[in-house]
Image (cartoon, rainbow over all chains, first blue to last red; front, side, top):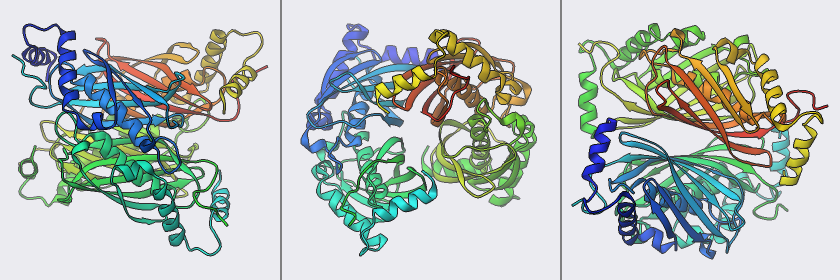
Length: 159
Length: 159
Length: 159
Length: 159
C-alpha cells in the first residue's frame, strides 16, 4: 500500500463529524467494551490518541508465576493490549504480526504497571510501535516492540 | 559460566535419588502447584522432560480481544509458561530475559491450543528455547523464541 | 494467500522439466551469481534444497570489530544470506521482513563459520526460517530467526 | 549489578580530565581506529555522545544481493556498528547479546544511509538501544533494537 493509498484508507475510515482525537477515543472505547480479555484482567485504558495509548494494571495474586513474581506473559499481555489500542486508533482494523519483549526487572504482586505505546513508523499496511512498561516507582520493567498489519474492516462504522 | 561450571551447577541441583526425567517431573509439579497464573488461566501441564515441556489450554471467552479472536497476549502467556517449565527442568531457577513471537493465524474461542517447548542451546547461564503453538487442527498459530537466564536458587530442595 | 493459492503460485514458478531439488539448486546458483555482497564477503553456498540452505565463510581480518572479534553484523549477514537461499528455493521471489539474532559466543579471526537454514513454517506469503551458526568446533555461536514475505516475480524464468 | 554499582563502574572508567562528552568522543575514535570491519565497509562515524551515536554509509555495488537491492545484512551491520559506538560510549567494554531488525523499504545502490542509535534503558550490565536507519529521502528503511551486555575491560585506558 502506498502512502497515498493509506491516506485514502484512513480518510474512508473517519466519520465526517470527528476529529482524529475524537475518532481515536471513540474507537478505543468501542474496542475496550468488546475486549473481554483486557476487562477480565482488570486493565484500564487511561488514554488514547492517534498512534498512541496508555494503559494501567494492578498486579493481582493470579498474575504471579511459580517464582512468585508477575508472569511475563501478563506483562506482555498488558503491553500487547496497549499496542492494540494505539494501532487501531485510526479505525482501520489492525492486528499484531509479531512482537518482541525484553524483561528488565522482576515485578511483584500489588505493584501498579503503566504501559505506554508510541508509534514509531507507519507505512502502507505495516507499522511499528514501542511500548514501555513501568512500575509504580517509575522504573522500566519491560520494553516491547510490536509490528502491526492492517486487515479489512473498521472498529466502528465509518459513516 | 563455563560448560564445566554448568555441569557442577546442575549436579548440585539434582537430588541423589532422582534421574533427570524424575527431577524434571518433580520440578514441573512443584512449579505448577505454585503457579497461580497458569492455574487461573486453565493451562494444563501435559509433559515435562529435561529441556522440554508441553502444555495445553482451551481458549475461553475471557481470552478474546476486541476483534473477537484470542488475545495475542494469552497465546504468548501459554508459550511463556511452557518455556518456563522447559528451562527450569534442571531445578536451577531460571527466568526469561527476552522473548519474541510471530503470530501466524487467528485463534478462535473454544479451540484447544498445544504449546511445545524444545531447548535449542544451553551454554553457561543462558539458553534458547523454541515454542511452537498449534491449534486443534494441527496448524501452527504462533512461533515463540525465548532466551533464559539462570538466577540463584532451586525450585525444589536439591537434597 | 490460502494454502491452495500457494500451491498454485509454486506450481507456476516451477519449470516442467525440473524436480523440486533441481529447481532449488538452479535458483540457488542463479541467485549466487548475481549476489555481489555474498561473493565479496567470500560466503560459499554449500547446499540448497527446498526450504533449506547451508553456507560457509571464513572470518577474515576485515570482519573484525573494535573489540578484535568478528563483527556481529557479518555473522548476521552470513545467516541472512543462508536464509535468502532457503526461502527463495521455490523460485518465488522472497525477501526478509524481519529478523532477530542472539549472539552466544565470540567469534575469532580465521575461524570457519557454517550457517544452516531450516524452514519452520510456510503459510501463504509468509514463512519462518531458523538459522543456526556454528564455529569450526561445532559450537553454536548465534541463533537467527527470519520472517519471509513473497513478492512478485521469479528468480529464474519459470518456463 | 545495582544502579550504584553501575555508577561506580562508570566512574572507574572515566579519566579525571574528561567530561562525559569528551570521553564518548575519545572512545569512539579509538574504537573506530581498530574497527577493521566498519572501515572496510566505508561506514563513517558522524557523531558520538554518551548513549548516542550516528553513522553514515553509501550503498556500494558490493552491498547488493541477488535481488539487486541492498543486502539486509549490511543494513543490519551499519545499525549494529552504530549501536556499538553508542553502548561503548561510557568506556566500559560492551557487546551485543541480541538484536532484532524490521526491514521496511528496499534500499538501492548509491543511496546514503544514516543510522541513529538512542539509548532506551540502561540498568546494571544490560541496556537497550534503538537504531533507526533512514535513506537520503529521510524515509525509515529499517528499525533495529539491540540489547547490550557489559563485559570486563575498557576501550581506552581509564587513567
